[in-house]
Image (tube, rainbow, N blue to C red):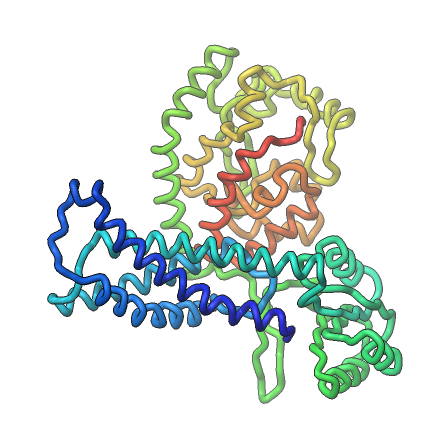
Length: 472
């Protein structure tokens, strides 16, 4: 463990304490501002000194909740959004306990305005303070090298090359590759450790024998070096697993997805509620778009496009953004001509490789179609697919049968759950990703699903939609 990581983790404790107290004090002050008093007169008699003492007494209990929620992790590369949601949850739990205590003890201080204001300010102050602290830590990490983990990679090709490239291109991950060894050589490792100092050794070659792995493991134990290795089976099967024992021997258990049993039920309820709200919220946009499409060109407003789901094919609904004679679906009476034109355009103008295509400067689009596709408005009708149960709010994007036929075997795993309106790939690069990268992100989602992850992806989708897409 690096001293800088320990320092910043400890620094968060007094920072959080100060932000909680500051939020409580400012909430109390707001209650007595002239504008608030005029609207709602103060009906309680509670001196500020007594209030401050209670705030100082209660603040450590919030820190305990933060610790239980994992907000004092020693990692230097914490995820902002994951931490943000944990802050909201932890502060809400703390405030709920305070409200419950006030309910039991009627003569205690009980201003709903102050309590709710303190809740909002605490979330805001703690988030800003933690972001600033983490930003400073990352600056020191990237530009000064404080807290960098010196890493030795053992292996060649494949995963090893990927790890090496990622760490070199993304120094904010906190690793510096100081050596890449094709095989395990203890004498060479001993020299590296003496001259440069090794913090971690990562073995990512499936061909290395168990004897060599034990040898390097013993070396790491003696020299207090973190040792990690990727079993060959995990490089080709899954990243979602757990270690268990069978007859006192460790075994690796490969897990498919948390989307089974109660997870599947929870996601379906989330989809029904979320799609219903989405349909209501976007109704004005839907009506305006429908009128614009009707006035702009002939043909149906909503077009049915055959896609492959987790249990067979279904019709994905989209606002029509092409001229009707160019649409590749059964609603087009000139389907054969449309397919021939699309095939020709893919050959000449597609900017994507692999099973999927993306036609640059597509001449088939209508004037309104160019706008609604660029803003992803064309996909709003898919909220009806979600409500019906053909799709989910979050999941791998559905593709056409002729595209799915070109999938590699490992890529077909993306068909194991319901397709989504948005997903990991959409918040990580939208249509600019290669299909292989898109599939890897979708498989990660399948293996690591949670409702919090769905909420995080939906939240980030709104910001992604604000960014201008490349001119395709």
